[in-house]
Length: 561
Image (cartoon, rainbow, N blue to C red):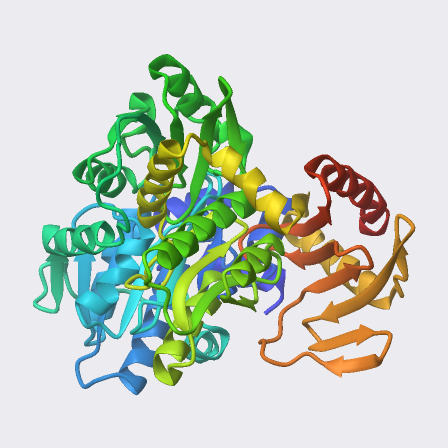
């Protein structure tokens, strides 16, 4: 069906949700075009998009279709009685989508565990393995604005579906002819539905508290903390408090709120997300401030340094955590035989430099923590790598792989420990960043986002990426491009010619390596209508690295119009 046929189909369908029908009647023609020109897709191990009416929106009908496809896949590939655990965050419709999904699964003969109230994404990942389930569903749009929601699917290892598995689910979804006719036929009290309460919580908290590396640190300092109205408040506060830290909440942001009423942004990558926690930190003289995104998988960090509060970016936070973990393992004589750190192709090379300085290997994956989670499973099977740490530049990390996704609760606890340790050495975490620079070189990084919403934006994004592929980029700001990697074609190009880019799935990503050790990477976002440009530079000093970032950012913008 074309767009107009889809609109008419929804308008005339007797089973369309009444509230969605009313919304449809009030849409403008452009809004209808954006909501109906395509189906919302499994692009990052699930769906994420604006909530509203239409096949390109998150609503009860698109969620039901996804859940029915997942149920059919589980029935074909799982046990005689497959099972799935479901969690949800604070967003509009999250609980409704979660409980309706439980009823859809039970209607198809799949046992459904559903949490009684909001939980963070890493606890859902943990729960899949703890409850011996075949799959997991997390209803969340992570750090996106309040208008969004999402639906992430996990395999039996607690890892988001990697593309081959996601495609199998998509194939089942595509076989369903009429999403508006899909309805659960059982109630929430069905024998195949079990409500999950505190049992999983305590098991998860115990595992988190077990990541502690040093037991006798002085914790006499204050931490200012905000969950940004999301699902991380209880687990982070519980674990930090039980570990002996003095944690103070941003009271106005601690309760769940789907409108994110008292924060300008729920995204730790955005400076506005820190206004509340910075105000609290100044009020109580905190030495460390922590911010988590709504589903509790990402953590933002600020430190008091020379009387001022400085925010660390995701690459710096990852480097500090890695430095502390590797240094402590070495000092305590606990370094494993094959220490391995994992990050992504858009992560700063500072991570690789720190890892190699301790004799650890750094393995890079495509963007998306599902690829790191998949590497954990592969390493367990092969025995060739000992997991030490994994992280992305986008403020997400995993200390111990009893979770197979980013885990802000673990990150908060380990960073608090690092703060306590370096404090005993007379250093702040910002001092540690510059200690790392002094040892492996100074790195700077920056991300530029180009917003391209709606059907017209999708076309422009396709044209932009196509234009870049057709451009033979030989230099940027006067610096020679020495290598190009095209992950869509899985090819690399350098002075020696064309090479196969092995070891990665296909992804619409272009990465350019410059002669001075810098790189520029361009990729469409998998979660928002944006094109993302990642810039990373290396120099003798941080000031020189920052100057390069600005120079390359201006030069790159010419190709991104």
